[in-house]
Image (cartoon, rainbow, N blue to C red; front, side, top):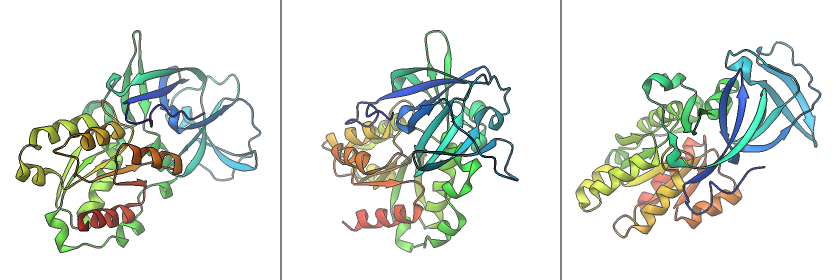
Length: 300
């Protein structure tokens, strides 16, 4: 089901699948959706958490079934089996929802970033709010949901311990664009451990672009802000591919290395990152490779 809209040459567009859970409207990027199914025979797993319904088999693959209403502590309005099968962070999970509504073709400029009251620090589950004519659709941070369900899908202490600090890292400035509060903190902690002291963090591509535009005419200010840019793909206001495309099309910024660090990276999407000029494309949560890639680009 996944669409190429989001990943096509930095158009700053996306498609959102709207669904209902507990009487509320939520959304997920279509790029994370494999398919929607209405029937499956679930085998329960002993001693699992209440929101983990169990496992089911489909087309030779085994999926974990997660009751999203229970995870969100919302009432259930289950009338039939409806599951959204998702694929991101190199992991496939099925989420039970109450109702599938429709797909919306939007610009990332239509997605507002939640304020501090809504995102609730690292516990926040909303990365964006889609402004419709008659209502709002909350875009859930499914990467955080997946991390809460299976911490192995996120950055691990064992991975962080593999990161070695180097004295020369303190001279490298990094601009990080990431909308997930949880991932921002985890990535930042890892970069600090690796010895990168000068890291500027923003929550979307638009904020990163505005900062770069302000300093691009002054070499010293640009160096102080960013020797390298690390960006997620899906972000409110401006996605990472549009940010990368704008950087590479600007004569004064074109030489700035850009690393796309996203849960949506696969072979096909990596090629699309290359088309907009990204110097490297890495799949979350490989922080060890991220640090190595920064070092390689700086040597080049």
